[in-house]
Image 1 (cartoon, rainbow, N blue to C red):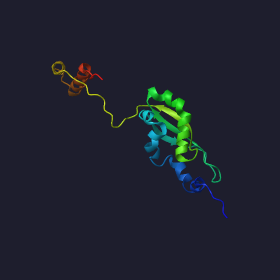
Image 2: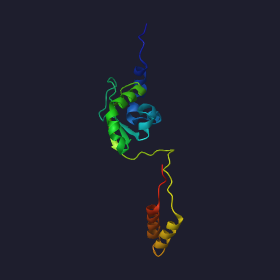
Image 3: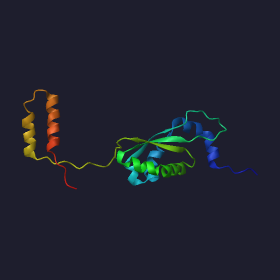
Image 4: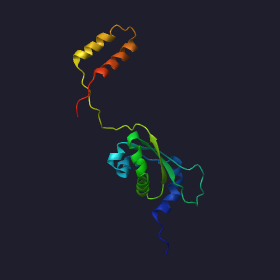
Amino acid sequence: MARVKPLAELIEGCIGPAFAAQGFASTDILAAWPEIVGERLARYCRPSRLEWPKRRRKASEAPESGTLVVRVEGVFAIELQHLAPVVIQRINRHYGWACVSRIVLQQDRVGRSGTQTPRTRIDPARAVEVQKAVSGIADDGLRAALDRLGTAAIATRPER
């Protein structure tokens, strides 16, 4: 009777080279990111790319682990740095093999879809003052820029 092989052994020969050449070829890691790192941390960091080692491996060798580059908001970089071993373990468990051995943090803004910044309030009387102040400027671009600057200067944020 033939020995039962783990699924990972069978799949590796078929998709391993394509998987390694493309990084993560699908958006699966993006879709599963909140489950991997948790909802709170997922709001402030996103996987950017998976870098594989440059050295070509032989078909008989086990695949080498890659480095996951993660964009993270500055205030959460330290937290993610401390949680990196846990995140690596969760990613590897999600994929069923040790595909990530290291995380590199790249501080950057992370767009949050579905969230809106609170609208600012502008006193109409003060907005008229700004328009009067910039009305004498002949250059359209400069006038528009100064109008935006003046409006931003007089705007007040709503209280939370």
